[in-house]
Image (cartoon, rainbow, N blue to C red; front, top):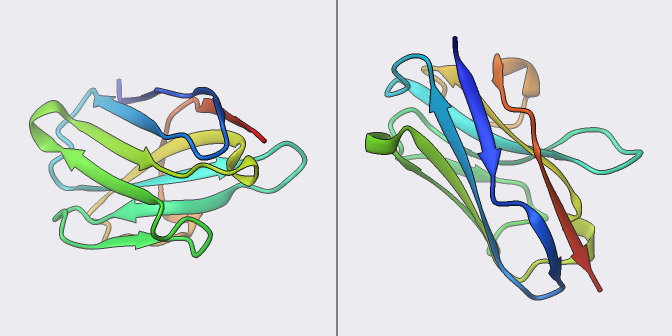
Length: 124
């Protein structure tokens, strides 16, 4: 059974950093592209960042460029999202997603594996 399990969320203050992890299991993920999405209360889910199945291409939402970094550790089947200089607007549930042979991008319909989400709350 394929599983994506996020961790690392929490309550932090504006300007702090957090590193989210997404542990993938149940199959080989070496050919998968990954992404992070987030959904704030009362808002639609939005794209945050993606990394291609080669690991060579990354994409970011404008709102997080320069602050967030997506990376993978293929040996550990884990995807990370390093979040620096967090802002209250970053408060949301963060979801990890994956799909085979994906170059990347922000269309949620392109991804068919999803985690359960981890809450990030940034206080001002």
